[in-house]
Amino acid sequence: MYRTHNCGELRMSHEGETVTLAGWVQISRGFGGLTFVDLRDRYGITQLVFNMDEDAELCQRALKLGREFVIQAEGVVRERSNKNANRPTGDIEIDVKTLTILNGSKTPPFTIEENTDGGDELRMKYRYLDLRRKSLQEKIIFRSELAIESRKYLAEKGFLEIETPYLIKSTPEGARDFVVPSRMNPGQFYALPQSPQTFKQILMVAGMDKYFQIVRCFRDEDLRSDRQPEFTQIDCEMAFVHQEDILNTFEGLTKYLFKTTKDIELGDFPRMTYDDALRLYGSDKPDLRFDMQFKELNDLAKGHGFSVFDDAELIVGICLKGKADDMSNKTFKQLTEWLKRPQIGAKGLVHVKFQGDGSIKSSVGKFYTAEQLQSWGSYFGAKAGDVLFILSGEAEKTRTQLSALRLELAAKYDLIQPGVFKPLWVIDFPLLEWDEDSERYHAMHHPFTSPKKEDIVKMESSDRKVLADIRADAYDLVLNGSEIGGGSIRIHDRALQERNFKLLGFSEEEAEAQFGFLMGAFEYGAPPHGGIAFGFDRLAAVMNGSASIRDYIAFPKNNQGRDMMIDAPAGISREQLDELYLDTKNPNLSAET
Ligand code: ASP
Image 1 (cartoon, protein in one colour):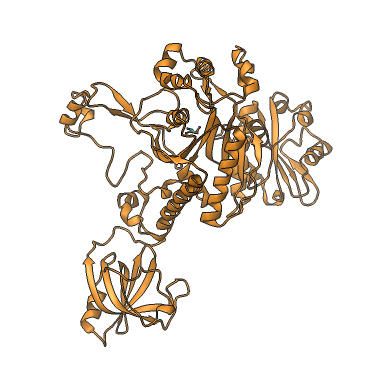
Image 2 (cartoon, rainbow, N blue to C red):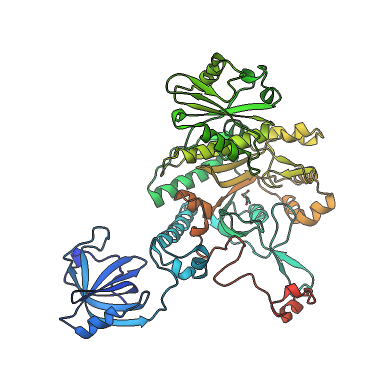
């Protein structure tokens, strides 16, 4: 037996017991005729003690143990004289009688401690060492619990866990595909799924009724800190459901996961239409952990000779509470510069400061009287000490800019309390989204999403305004300003699906070639159905207040899409290229040139 206990479980109640532990040497140090070794495993750290007077040779061997050596130690549990209240095992130590070195270790390239000295790339290369650190272990363990609890909830609700293929067909809709050449079919390629969307719908046609899968998805997109080329979804689909059934089932899942993994009770989730989300927060994923709703000022601010406002489609602002006296002209200047950066692209920022002494200061004081500015303040419910921030211009862009400012102010002035969770359903998304570059419509969610029944007639219109107005039975689950899930009720009727493809600019032939199998299936008794997918990595991160999903993935890729540990992607041999019918003359294709 390698061990009788793990390194996190021994307490005073074990005093006097002979135990065997195994694990990694965190540190070994000598102190007045004693050697202390901190022995670590996934469960914790236990102190081992070796006594010079009892066994000098053993004590010397212990002193020579390097960091990360793998050892086994047998000894007796005893009370510690100087207890460590910060450690669950801090009341006891092991008086070691035998020591076995199971494996040595080179000196690790960075310290395996909470505040490690290793940089990002180095830690990714030695991911197995980084993963020994407690905070990373906790994240991977949390992820495991989240997966297991998801399965429990969904199984209890009658869902079947069904796998769908990873080698499928490339389609132009959505993000870029990763492709895999087929050796057996010269010149042909599989694509890795961006999601199991069409398969889960076919499973509904096949009568499976309730499906889920914790499944890898692949999207060849430019990477950001919260994106990975492969990521995991809790993917779900149900037959004979309305939107309401889906929202209830998955609100239930989210509450259950919070309860079981974090012991947090979430109340009922509020709902907001997509239109309201944009109007009130300038975003389809508003962060409701702090207030600052948008208010529109067109009626109050136009017609007073300030041409920037007079010419604007929209004048819209937010009110920051209680910070007026902290904000100097320099602060406003910095915020203005920040807003003018190309990433945001605002033209300027107007502020109105309701100072503690009752006076009002504004960057547009020349154009408006104190009474007029006061009326803006009343409209916002502003009191002495509050500041209004106002942007203007083209409506959609201005809302997006103000949304960015709202988030920036929340971060700058610590408006978000840690440990607070604010879920929100955003519903009634538009069916279509106009793309200026390609001059055609894209599906806002995906092309299988059903328009609302009452809006189906609008699909016959050629008026862009009418088409933009079509609402879908599509919904997103937003948590603390992150989209953690999204789905829709699907089209289950061939004619309507054909009509939708036509709106999206597919010719009949294209639609048939790419999605004929799905439309064919709709002709054999497809039940009404709908579903949702949760971004599993993101859910794990957001539930722990983290902005990045990387630490919640055991083996993530870096910003260039590289796996630093195995050094992928990499070239392949001429023989492999040949077998796959790839251009063997292209020197970039082979590692062997
Ligand atoms: N397949 C969709 C996605 O990946 C989710 C869904 O509609 O169920 O976003």
